[in-house]
Image (tube, rainbow, N blue to C red; front, side):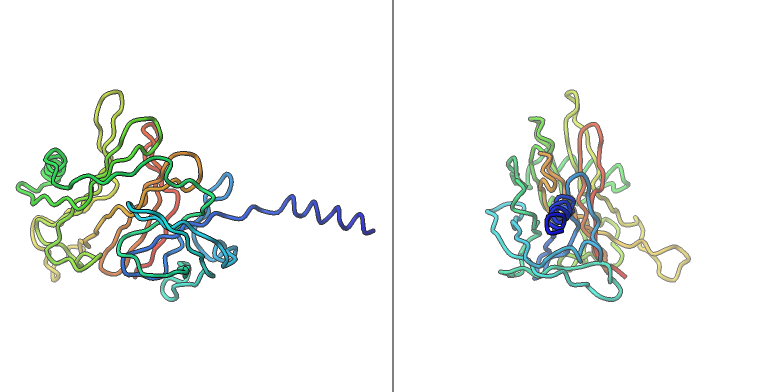
Length: 278
């Protein structure tokens, strides 16, 4: 009987589900990062109560901003954000200093940065002109071009560098959140530039252009809520050698993160997303 019991135990251990590799996202000024989701062999796992219950509270994470050296922290138990976002969770980490920038928290078992991620000067004329042309195409005749981030990286490991352009202008912006409604001339663009067969192409990661005329709240027109799109991180979250693009979208009553996988042939695919809003 004892032998059969040990055999059954061994089979149970062999068939046990592998521990997920959770991904957390930190926001400027927020001490506890948000649970974005996880990877386990063969599949992505959405954030939510089921994943939160699988975290032991003893996980270790590599903490990495877009640039600068990484550090290692330990995570605690996932805690629900509560009403109205009961299915969203944050995970306290130790040490837990609030970041001054967006940060990715991923398993130390992963090489999240297989290739360099390099910031470029936001004053580069060529990229300012790209943003100007994109805004003109969206109806702004004389846009005020404001590049807020410019990042170069070989996302998919094919030897060709991609460039991510972040640009925004909100007259009434406060911190990481835009106003409820933008003013004429306000916008937010997040673009990915890449080369295919010698041709440069632009992929839109996020966009918002305020109405060209001020919105009248007494009219029957729906409220054109402003959205601010930011680049929050670049990291390989599943160990396949391709780095996911992590983005942050904020409006006046909430915000959300997403992890998007990009390839020149397959385009963009959202793999993980989580957030909280009214």
